[in-house]
Image: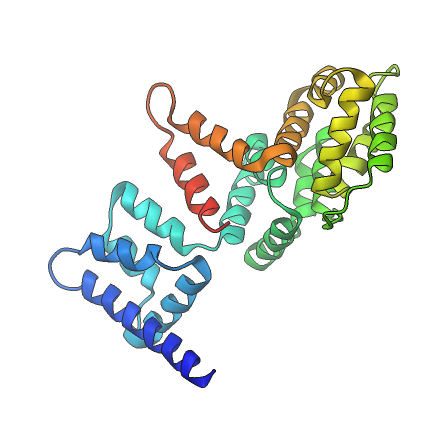
Length: 274
């Protein structure tokens, strides 16, 4: 165990020395920077950055920014930021200032796992000395706000057990709370969609198709509108197949006239940690 620990420390020192060598002198060895930073995960990059700072008296991310430019700089800097911190910063930008960027709130809060949301809330409070839930509550309203806050309570069951009878009963509850009545009881939707496990919800959606004769997405489209509808549909898409959701976002970022480089970098870098 001691030998293993020594080897890890030695590897980190070698990596930070290679990074420093790649950036010193005239020009920057971009291939070496890419090679060293993409071979390790974000947690290891933080350790390398800490060792680099102690050894050379400067911040690794600062040196990277000074040596790199354009899209490569954007990618490498994104690699150096922990996913939860990056999400927290995006959420803060979406909430602060004039108006609220609801799309960012939906893209992050409705697509992250329970564990990821817990880390995001911690990062948000650490970075901004504010509670994410409080800021979301003050900047949103109605069904949209209630869904986001329900998700941010992070009370989702993490088990993989599926109770088919309960799935059928919950499907009936959702049908009764929406399509079967005048008006919508969104509290029932939130209680089920924000607390049941992913595996259980997939079973609920299957049962809903039996009960209603069509998928739950059709019910959401008819019962909700605006940001609430988009949030529910995003949540359901991620519950059914999260990799497919991110693949669709990548496709959206690259199709049409020009590429949304910022969106593309954010998705690919963050998903590389999964």
